[in-house]
Length: 65
Image 1 (spheres, rainbow, N blue to C red):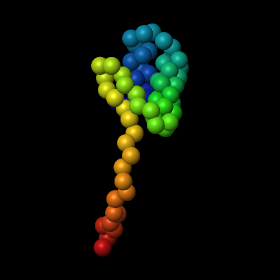
Image 2: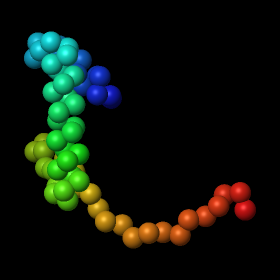
Image 3: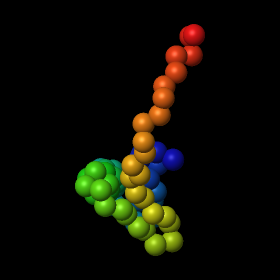
Image 4: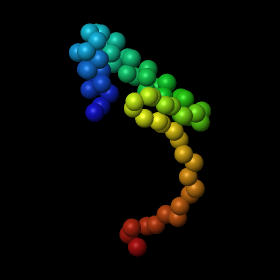
């Protein structure tokens, strides 16, 4: 599912104009990105929890060799 699909569903279910629905989806994702960038987690009841995990670096490899 893409952002356009989400905007289309908002348009169909809520009746918002397509431009407003697309703007709302964009605002939602921008807000989520900024919250996650600050190191906070996001919990949406009945859907899931989003968080950024700190992972240690791992050794890379060259597939050509």
